Length: 157
Length: 157
DNA sequence: GTCATATTGATAATGGTTATCATTATCATA
DNA sequence: TATGATAATGATAACCATTATCAATATGAC
Image (cartoon, rainbow over all chains, first blue to last red; front, side):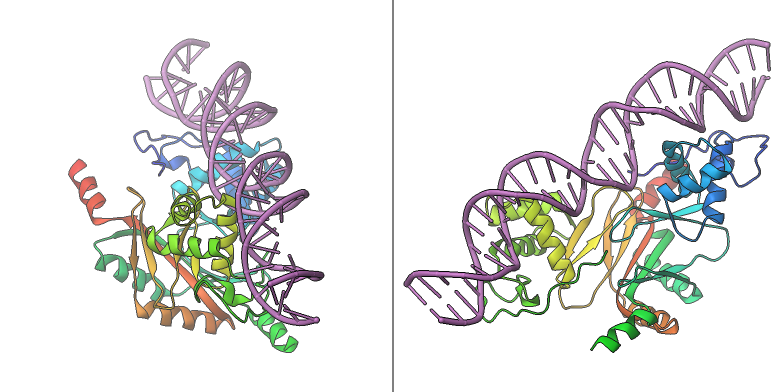
């Protein structure tokens, strides 16, 4: 099920900056702003739990349900992205208007390295077009061993 | 947490064919064989629940816990792959030795189209190498609207 | 200020997945 | 073939991330 953000209503004035998610036709909310700030300042990849902790420092008393709702809203309007690791809870990252990035995921130590390559965007668009698809986004995760873990493994043998 | 398949013990004889997952140093099991068969015959993308239903026809009485365990085992030894959609339960697909494929995911109707492109494998290897990564696999999901849903959207406007 | 309604926090409910445990099946060895 | 070690199994309880509910509150158009 895909949640379609309501676009029929537009806010005329906004007191919490242009980044709180309210530009998508929702009411302006200081909590959503706190969630977005937590997302962009708290680290590259935060679980909902971690976002909750961090947002609680910015806006004390914020509830975990609100964090989940805000994350969903922010993902819906493109200001955040959700990543689902093979195990553990979903993690989130702020998604600015800049170039998007992909992930190298180390299966040994769990490290996630963000990478960016323009060729990937081109290839993805080409693949989609070939199948009559109108792409809105993509996600590339490369699994393997990071250099440190690969070295560790070699020394064990 | 990564589950490392025990490789210290090797089975000398196997009565259920080379595809049951036991070649990874585990005991041979007819249920695991049934899960793998369900996976390859039941459809391109099955949830654990669906695998359970299908495997139950092959090997009646198989438990849901066994299905989860078998799926994990098969994923661990490369005979299956786990996909985590943005919502809903994880789905699984058989992963033969043939060329791997990527996914076009329609965000309107939920359809998943499998695509395959050798350029993707090359690009992925290049990206990993650039960061000292030893890649073991990757996953590319492209989100957007399939041709039918895109057409439907246009007719609405 | 007033009204309609989106948002919120607390918390119960949900549901996919995993852990537990007693029993059974598998396989190497004698 | 019998035996012992132990992996696999089924039933089900437990886990836990996420969602639904609901009454109270905050927001924004007028």
